[in-house]
Amino acid sequence: MSTSHPEHALDRLEERLARLPLRERKKLRTRRAIQDHALRLFTEQGYDQTTVEQIAAAAEISPSTFFRYFPTKEDVVVTDEYDPIMAEIFRDQPPELSTIEALRATLREILPQMLDVDLDVVNTRLRLTAEVPALRSRTFESMREGTSAMLSEAVGARVGRPPADREVQAFTWAVIGVMQAAMYQWIDGNATALDMPELIDRNLEFLSRGCPL
Image (cartoon, rainbow, N blue to C red; front, side):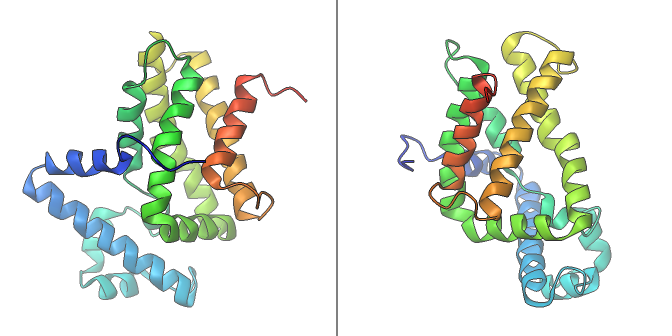
């Protein structure tokens, strides 16, 4: 899959950040720094062997400050800033596209660029999520509270239905399911001929055809 796009998807993140008050920009930079130190320590000494106190010391903050940014130790792995950017790109898709085609176009724009910038971070987060039971559990809750809620709202707005609509919810969870299937195939090395964005796109195309077997 080509990673060439007329507009760099992550530029939207930078533009969005530039509109934030200085205090919010500082908070986001601190958040990213904490996550970088946490992922490094998890890689070096193991997730279970790494304490919040060690992460806080590496980031030169107090443990109480850590918990102001991340409610739990698990959240430092499962949290990122991409959902609002994904929602913005999805809203900008041409109205003539079907909902799933609009979503495929959104991910074709953002995923290659995200991986260009954050491949090591994404790899580490996915590997930890696959290996640590507590992270798998928290990832599901984060999906329900974050990505699922964002998608339901964006999809509902596109089709003129409330986010809680039964079919909007079913569509949202079907999308999340085929995306997760692609991620686990990629982590497990069962799709070495494809990169992750292409694998996700193929799974979404399969979903758009009704998952025929």
